Length: 312
Image 1: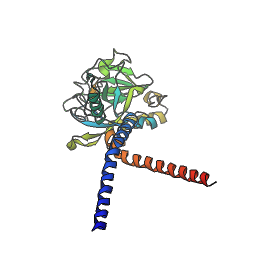
Image 2 (image 1 turned 90 degrees about the vertical axis):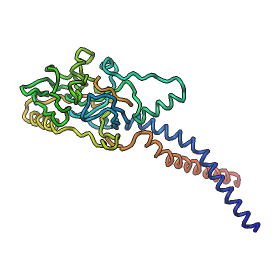
Image 3 (image 1 turned 180 degrees about the horizontal axis):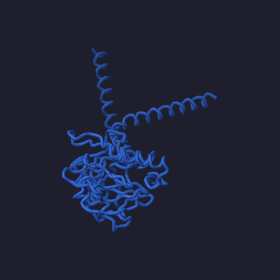
Image 4 (image 1 turned 30 degrees about the vertical axis):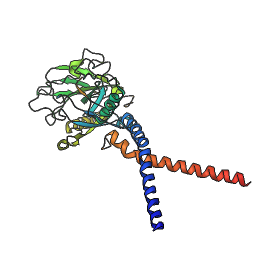
């Protein structure tokens, strides 16, 4: 009986030690998760909340999208991409969401977490579709009321808001400056985009360096989950460009940006299917365990070296 009782007590003590160890390590795991979430959000992928109607029907109010921040490090921005960009210095006077910064440290923490999850506005970012690239000439409209890029009309019925014309105002022709892009919303009648920013710095265009990344998937609500592919009309335009370049027709070919990706709808703050905080939480445990293994290996080596020195 004494032996059985002793064994049971030992098991209880071991269980208590394990529970105590878990609660001691939980704060470490939380810190690791937050650090990893910050790294992922800053350089890899970020969730954004859509608060306006200017990208309808592609994006609706309340949608959450994931933005790939790495894609333009390996390729140029392409026509038809839906991109998030920073409007500082050019589109700040549009329909920017003003976010009051909390003063309480706890509130600041929850605000930061909300922005990482894309459920709270950042107040400085916008989302639009790329219509024209550096060196392109964009104008509106042709005889069928279509936007043209390098003289090629765009058939946009597949993604424009139902009943919306290609644009609600004539403009151009405008040649997009080097290092900048021309952006427009899919709901043309209410989109405050490059057309209405022509009197601002950049004359409506946005610097490539201001592009945060490409929105590549809608992750919320669940019944709207899906990817954001480039419409076929832009692929046809790219083919026309290539054919013009191969035939020596410089008028039809755009200039390639010398520096690859080094107001419309404001958005709140392709590749990974989860938000940064979820990725950070998922990676926190293996990262922590790997760190403990490294620590144990270092300790064993230190003890072995110390024991050898003592023997000598």
